[in-house]
Image 1 (cartoon, rainbow over the protein chains, first blue to last red):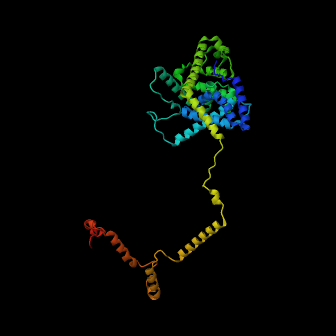
Image 2 (image 1 turned 30 degrees about the vertical axis):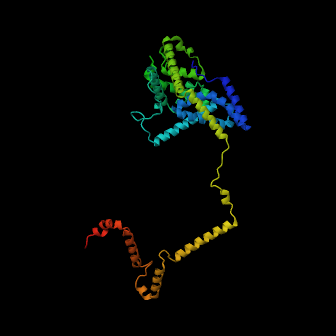
Image 3 (image 1 turned 180 degrees about the vertical axis):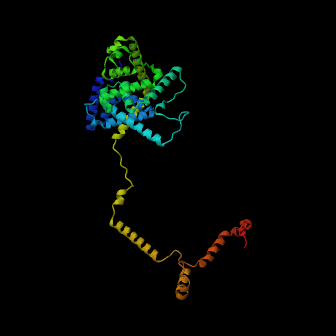
Amino acid sequence: MTGARAAGLPGREADSTAASTVKALQAEGRHPEARERFAELVGRHQRRAARIAYHYLRDPADVDEAVQDAFVKAYSHLSTFREELPFEVWFTRILINGCLDRIKARTRRERWMTSMPDGPGGERDFAERIPSHGPTPEDDLLARERRRRLAEAIAKLPDRQRSVFMLSHYEGCTSREVSGLTGLNESTVRVHLFRAIRKLRVLLGEGAGRHGEK
Amino acid sequence: MSILRRMTSHLDDAVFAELWTNALAEGHDVTTHPHLQVCAECRVRFASFSQWMTDIRVDAIDEADEQIPAERLAAQQAQIFRRLEAAERPARVIAFPKNSDGAMRRTPVHRWVAAAAAAGLVAGLGLGQMFDLRHWSPSSARVVRSERVEPSTAAVQPRPAVLPASLNEEATLADLEAAATPRYEALRAYDTFTPRAADFIQPR
């Protein structure tokens, strides 16, 4: 139904093998080979990591830094990685924690520092940071407008609901994986997901074609 | 909500959201829902709801991919490996201050020199407290001596702490005069025209 299921089990086994090999190579001090093997993991997860980071941060420069930091941290702490958890989940947790730290730091910075007003109203909101491009065709404009509204709606969700929604719906994680990523239990994940969907439906009301009980 | 009502009324967004959540979280087959099996209208609405959810996902992913294109990912990857390489390179320790080892290794001669310098400093400070040498000159020394010869006068008049101002006044004024007088003949005319401080003081 969703078509959003995560990369799949064969990928996970390959991840697990690669992670174990990198760990062993690091322990033997064969760093160039360890890096070479780690490149496999980077190649497999980078796109997904960039998407997740973008959904949180909504700024390509911040995404670059967050993804780099997450991979560097994963590589240097690979000795603490336990195989019972998929590498993907372990790594995503590092990434999400980094993104949340960045958002916190950004909020703190914006509280104390005045930035130049961006729009006519001068507000600079988390959801409003969608970079503008040059003149585009009408379809692009409409798509952009739709995305902007969606981003605004997502930004209005409470943190946990937002995380659960993004991981479940965008990344196709199961409630068990989301539970592993967020530290929430599975039933709580489901409740957050349900609430997030319902709230989005309300927030994006007109476009969503709401139907009440008849 | 009663069972009868549940069977007869159409499903609302909350139910759709619940169905969707269960399908997403646990892989439930939505089409087995009793109401959806009998109500064509709700099936259509649920299909529209599902489409809306899919559109949201597609939009979000498209946007992220648009903002982070393949070239950006390549640059990001290169940067990751640069950082990993740099982290593994042994750190260089720069000695500061330069030749600090030499400075730390002291010989007995260094110690004697340091001790002598410290003793000199202490002696200098002590002498400085005893004698005020700031205004010392041979002539003033004579004046001080002559004052000491006449203790009765000194007892009547308050003994000056330093030197009588009048003694130096003349010399200072002479110096000032010399500095203010132009040494070049060509400038003398300008000097004549230049008003003095005294010109602005009202005579009493």
